[in-house]
Length: 312
Image (cartoon, rainbow, N blue to C red; front, side, top):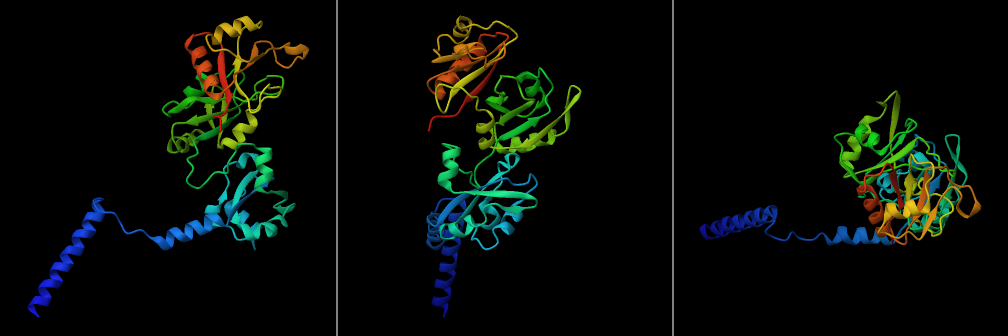
């Protein structure tokens, strides 16, 4: 009995040592193959659909009620409401329930008709865009109600104390190159972006500013400007106090970077841009970034906004 008790004590101490080593990271934990197999199986059975036309206040619970007999993978975690200001969301469902989900096309949530798009359809409408995942770190916010003449520095001052990513301030432009009173800001981290939302309804001058969460889908959609040579474009929008921007002046601003096309107010005989504005296209995303940095460092009176996404 004494020998058995001694062996038992030794085994218990050995087990405690292994547990302590695992906790400290010096021992590889036992893999949970059952959980991994379940996750792989779920991933293989997954397809994603896009819902368009959602009410702004729609929640994940509303979407689950809408798809009442559709197998939504992960429950609420399978509903991605990142592009809510555009009335869109993505839902991960079981592939076997795709036909069932499509039957809900043009049914209502609240008083809004909901359009259901398959993955092939929304990838055609938003080329290069991949639906967000629960682990994706969203760092973008949307501003509305900006005063006329608001500059990037005004926006940076409004978010004083919150780290903004390089070239992270973006202002969408209408077809005739007038600014819209909106802006998008990309922060250095998800946590900073969440804190930046506390600036909602704070004042910039005499205007109170609305600050909303958003994502890359809305930004890509709103930041696109017509009449580009390339698709998708890699461009820089120039907003200047000068009323007589010319191609030579633009080329000097971005030198030694070489644009592939410069859109001015009278480009190709079509009056697309207001005086004092230009859209300058480059061959690649990296060239557009380099050109914008180069122009920024020259200390001119122009403001520059990036209209480009990374090449995929």
